[in-house]
Image (cartoon, rainbow, N blue to C red; front, side, top):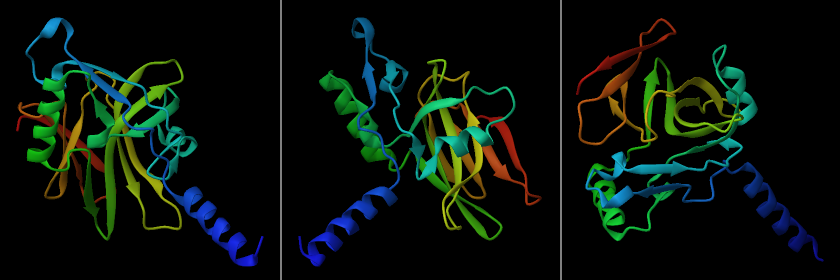
Length: 198
């Protein structure tokens, strides 16, 4: 092997290692039991997250940031449009139409003073086996990405989206409904949650 070949192989290896962990997509399956006609995000959703980190943040760091009494995560993946699959052509068509119309549904940014945080939503699998949605805010301004805030939504169904709204982030469990919870930075180094209709 030449030095040039070795250096090229090393560069590819380093680039792969530095890339954020991503799920083998898709990892969310949508189906309608009995041929129902509900919106696809209200249909049966089965999620199998397998990632060992989210956007470059390892699970160990996320677990350390969880509140007291929260279950440890054994896997987690951020959602993207490509995370969703269905054997039903009608559901696939609905998903494609909604994703094209709505734009980015699963990530947003929030400015907190001089920092801009990346917000992602996804699914985590607790070590007990339960799967639920999460919201993760990531500070990417240091040498390595770190957790700025994490929250689980164990009482929600599996669908979750996030949208920016000025100095707030709006989280919802549906696309066309009035259910929403907002997260705002209060300027005093705290995040504040509020449940509200859209």
